[in-house]
Length: 453
Ligand SMILES: Cc1cc2nc3c(=O)[nH]c(=O)nc-3n(C[C@H](O)[C@H](O)[C@H](O)COP(=O)(O)O)c2cc1C
Ligand code: SF4
Image 1 (tube, rainbow, N blue to C red):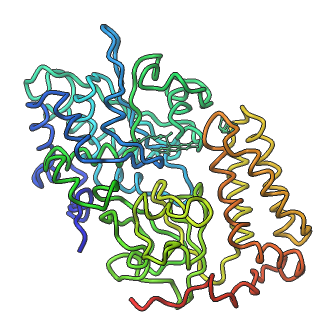
Image 2 (image 1 turned 60 degrees about the vertical axis):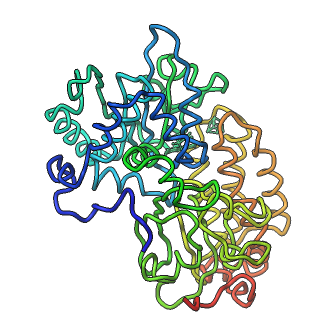
């Protein structure tokens, strides 16, 4: 059994209440941290090797140490709970079931950063979670863990929950800050980075829900202990939201370094592919990361077992690797249509583009239209090259990474499944009636038989 640092008590009845959470050792990290100096806390987080769980995997301790500290200017901690990436639903799970873990992490992290006002920004549709968090904040405040003079230490912290307008782009940290300031959620040009000029122009750290929750076990057990879990520069545990054609979809806490095959097929995790089908492809880290065919998600290019870690998943670069991203793991069985899935993702990114830069605004629309005609039997053989060309023109040429996020799924689907796209052109009538590219299944490299596990 892998160690559980975040979800250990998730099934304890009433764990969403202060009293039950406290009876399981909750808020001990606040008591410990308030006796430390902010610098010591930052040092523990650095030692832990924690990397941001929002997608990019940037080291959290290093990000904290970049925070500017000008005299007389407030600093802010903003928790990013926007979580709108298709396939990703781990933060919502954590906030719904164990809200005090996030609040505890927010108090310790705010103290470490010298913030006296902090925010948890949620996607506008997450109103149940807004209410859950507000109730938990009121409980923590009543017990002296928030507000003025926390636990008699002289430290003050006000924590607010802010629902957003309901847009994927508001998860991008600078768009989030615009939205939090009451404006339209358009990403800002960087630099300046939020650590220098963030919320209301003041130094700000934006961290993912899971990153902030992970600060709790780091302070309780110490950064060195945390760093012993995991593999290489992928330390600690990670929440993975598993969906698609799996026997047991859900949210799992894994120790980083777990073999992908074990995650998919063992009963401790997803239990294999549903309905006795074979695995065809996987999106390992949310819709933004390159899709990989089954053989490449189970093995690296050197024929080693592919692991659930930042390094192993990206082995082979964008030619034959992918990314851990936000931990949104989607498995596709042999009946899944890659063309339809790619069109679906493209439709999402076109809809969510904020429209500030033309490669993203126009390119996502083009990709959606071309993929639509391929899926519905009006495609041309030249469309695949056209899609790759458009994706290259978007990639790296935009204000924020949403452009890359839109380009990579399309480019990787064509790289690995070009024959299925071609099949949609040559067998237009069958493709339109959704006989999902059966030609593909004969290819032993792409479809993997049920695992021996
Ligand atoms: C289009 C887009 C959407 C994003 N959505 C989220 C999100 O929902 N949650 C999140 O934590 N990070 C999201 N990010 C990443 C954030 O910009 C930022 O890197 C992250 O919140 C930093 O937290 P971390 O260092 O703890 O990972 C998104 C980025 C982009 C480009
Ligand atoms: S890349 Fe897309 S979402 Fe990001 S700023 Fe440009 S238009 Fe907006």
